[in-house]
Amino acid sequence: MKILVCISSVPDTTAKINFTPDNKEFVSTGVTFILNPYDEIALSKAVDLATTNNGTVTVINVGDVTTEAVIRKALAIGANDAVRINAPARDSYFVAKQIADYVSKNPFELILCGRESSDHNGSSVPVMVSELLNQPCFLFAKNLVIDGKSATIECEIEGGKEVVSTSLPFVACASEGMAEWKIPNMRGIMSARTKPLVVVDPIEVEQKVKLISYDKPASRSAVKMINAEDVSQLFDIIREEKKII
Amino acid sequence: MSVLVYIENSEGVFRKSAFETISYAAAIATKLNMPLVAVSIGNVSQDELAKASKYGAQKILNIANEKLATPNSQPYASAITAAAKAENGQVVILSASFAGKSIAPRVAIKLNAGLAENVVSLPEMNGSFIVKKGSFSGKAYSIIEMMDGIKVISIMPNCYKVVENNVAPQIINFDFIPTEVDLVVQSKERIRSSNTISLPEAELVVSAGRGMKGPENWGMIEELAKVLGAATACSKPVSDAGWRPHSEHVGQTGIAISPNLYIAIGISGAIQHLAGVSSSKVIVVINKDPEAPFFKAADYGILGDAFEIVPKLIEAAKTFKANQN
Ligand SMILES: Cc1cc2nc3c(=O)[nH]c(=O)nc-3n(C[C@H](O)[C@H](O)[C@H](O)COP(=O)(O)OP(=O)(O)OC[C@H]3O[C@@H](n4cnc5c(N)ncnc54)[C@H](O)[C@@H]3O)c2cc1C
Ligand SMILES: Nc1ncnc2c1ncn2[C@@H]1O[C@H](COP(=O)(O)O)[C@@H](O)[C@H]1O
Image (cartoon, rainbow over all chains, first blue to last red):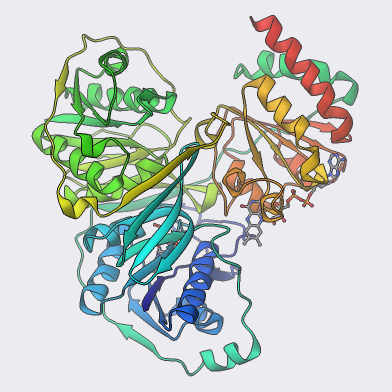
């Protein structure tokens, strides 16, 4: 089974998010970039599936050369090889078009993604990739079991869950709990340096949305401490002062 | 030309997020001077459908093909696309719910439209079309210009108030037959948890962390939530340990929520947790450690032992609710 895992390189979860004074650009100096946490789960799941199904795992990233550290991390975790589409990830449509184009020329039986990237938060790339390839997509998959060509997937839905079945190929996205995180061992780290990483030129994609600037949430006023003895008044205070309940 | 809004039903009933979405779409339709068309898919009664007109939908397209009885993002996206084409939809609006997120990007591709997800406020529509969306896991917003052409927007639950705007209901059956290609996924089983308040849409959320010591102590958390009519949530280590289901986990790697009131009990306030909850309108933190970082991100703080405070809060909530009625 040939598995493709789409990975993105995102600011470390503890990073302070800062922008240039004109708010037009994200300031990446001093920020460590990591493999998007959900993508790491997707990769772990892919490595498990490849082990039990005699398969291979390829990771793909749309990004400039700065994402290669994260790609090497993915190779250290257990991917067999990597592809980098050499272009900054302008928007989700751009990224999805690149991935779908690559897959249409190099077919995979299963595409795994994360459920969302922690910078863009769109949850769009996987759905767009699946739409472009005319495949189903399970954006909120909690559990994925593959048996030959068929699969059973447990998905999160509003207020509950749904169990569905389908057959390969399809796109599934990882959430917390789909697989155990894998910590790269020394052998993995050493072999990652020599595993193939192919750099591919991007295709042209029409631009439909354009980032203008960033904004930060308004900061909260200082916390108001309520005496433990006055807890009985909490809800009245909130109603009085905030009028939200 | 029209503005089109997809309204999601849950077992034949529209929830609050559906009415928020219509209200939001109605404001855009008014601004663009276009009629508002609502699209409903699945088995929904005429009475329920008519509710859409209370919030400004002039026309309600009812797509009730039996093959669409169970939600399924591929044929649903095709159905919405067909409706948008028939109505010459210029802006298509959905809720950024689990279902909406699975459908919106497909509709955008099918319509060759631009997509903006998790939009938090009305667009700026003075010549250009500019939206504000959540990014960096709650730590920032991105301001996006959507270029000329059709636009697809998904809006965050709880970010836009339901606005009444009565118009005469006009319900039209819209024929749509899904193709085989769109029906490759079979639903085996749909299980609804007893907790009927869906976390992403909840206005009030009671959340607890490792400070609760163990799953056996969640009774008081559930009771407080029940009295308030709130959904329950938890921190990541709590769901990792299996004390609570993963579907309750909020934060950077869980669900991002923006309720009116978020009560955090025994949660330290790690940056990854805050990422998912900081857009709550009011935050109350209960923690026994005065140094807990969460106090810095809160509107109200109660310093003390959760095992003493929460029972008092349950009583307070009961009194508050009783006085309300
Ligand atoms: C990549 C990554 C992603 C992450 N994503 C998330 C995420 O999405 N969501 C998330 O929540 N975390 C996430 N985390 C974990 C996060 O860093 C914290 O570890 C976690 O939020 C801590 O959970 P907690 O507050 O329940 O536990 P703790 O940090 O252990 O805090 C427990 C708190 O309870 C208080 N307490 C103890 N006893 C009592 C009592 N009797 N009464 C009152 N208060 C009491 C303590 O003072 C303490 O402040 C992530 C971490 C990483 C590395
Ligand atoms: N630049 C990228 N390159 C490859 N895959 C990506 C990229 N951006 C996002 N993805 C994949 O799409 C998922 C959802 O991302 P997003 O749509 O940005 O929320 C991520 O978890 C990745 O699996």
